[in-house]
Length: 321
Image (cartoon, rainbow, N blue to C red; front, side, top):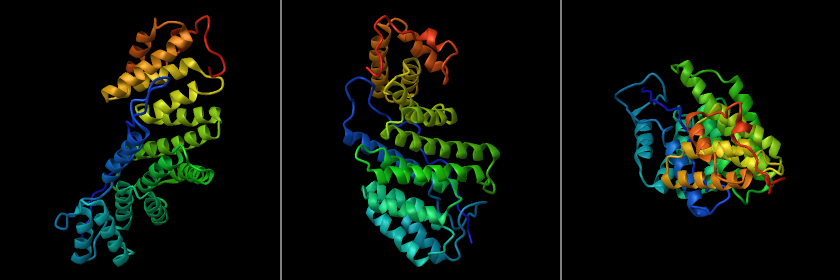
């Protein structure tokens, strides 16, 4: 028998969005495609690399060469449709394989790459049932739930399902036990990443329900766990700025922070200009915006004197204007 290595990294840390208060730099279709590509890239890290001859300390144990070869064939397939079919065949022939969870994670990614979200959702449900206490599996499903719930046309059932999943997931993380062979530091990192996604799901649902106070709390929790998570940081900025009674200093700070975190030149320029536009509207001119950008690049948390750093002008907008 042989063991296969596995990864703990399932989540994108830099999902770009268009800037606040300005022209969109990406079409909705491009943003959806970027989301899927990022998810697939991270899900790919979860798929163990087959190695019959070199047993590892952790991972699935194949009972015979035939089981291994079938799994390896699915793993090595590059065509998403053919790969999904190969993993389905593996799961059908070996329903109790120790590689079942790994195969299901890969199956979710294969269906997502095809754009077949119905089958991806079904595979995610099977993954949840097969690995109720696996944080990597929980994270994989959470990313899919987050993607579905954040769609502009997501219905109430989809949002409610995501909320229930996230609430259950937060409790599951609390009671999770560290996998054998994983360091304390890596286990904490895995829990933080998983909770970041779960808190973001709850934040997104709160936005759709127009509960901005709850959204701010959930996204703030996510950012506290993962200060360099661009997606969570920018979502927090919007939650503060788009509320009926916006909190401009915090919203502008996290917009500047998003600009600092963005590695895409167009994205960085978009966040910077969008934040500047809002800053001018709130402050009256752009004096001081460069200092906000400088401080946000150096620190993930706002300074104690944030309200002095970002002051309202004489005609600062009120109640969401």
